[in-house]
Each structure stands twice: as C-alpha cells, then as structure tokens.
Image (cartoon, rainbow, N blue to C red):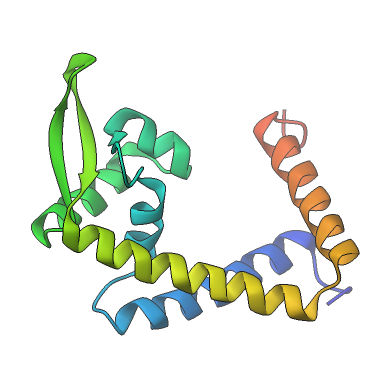
Length: 144
C-alpha cells in the first residue's frame, strides 16, 4: 500500500471496516450508524441532543434523520432537559440498551482481533499518526 496516497488508504480502510460493521448490524436489522449512535449515548443519564452531533463528528441534519429512525424503532426516547427547558435529552430504551450491548460487543471483538495481529508499538504509531492527521485537518493546517 506504500504506493497509495494517505487519503486513499484512510478512505478504503474505513469503507472496508464500515462494510464489515454494516454486515454485522444487518443481522439484527440495524446499521453501523445506528450502532455508533447507540454507543455515543450515555446509557445511564442519556445525552443532550445538542452535544451528540459534535461528539460523533456529525452534522445536525444527518444525526436528526438517524435519531428519528431510532425513535421510530423504539431504541431511544426524547426527554426534556431539566437543565435547559429548550433542550432535549436522548435516552436509551430497554430495547436500545440491548442493541447497544450488541454494538459494543462487535466493537470490542474488532479491537481484540486487531490487537492480536498488531504489536503495541505498531498500534501506538497508528494512534500517533491518526492524531496528527486529525489535528492538522481540524486546525486547517493543510488548506488555509
């Protein structure tokens, strides 16, 4: 892969991982996006809807569609935010908690499988490079 561009490797690797997660999620009639959202919601206290998008790195419109679908399927409930009368807390239903556990197990299995094949040093380099790329993009150090 050394002859490929960095963005190509990032994109194709992520698309492969995404496909794998979607195949697993399809077994329970779900999607990777739903699983990611379930994992991003605090299972005990819920999560304010306004902080969920930034936490997931998603635009509000995309997240809104996912949340509406999840609510229809009975995975989440919306409750008024006691700290902010205008806000909403997204909470997991019992069904949502069950599906969250499934998603969590899939993520942990993936991580465990990778850790068996990759040394700690390689993984640390991966984290370092990913952090550098993320910081450079977020801080507009590539295209000013």
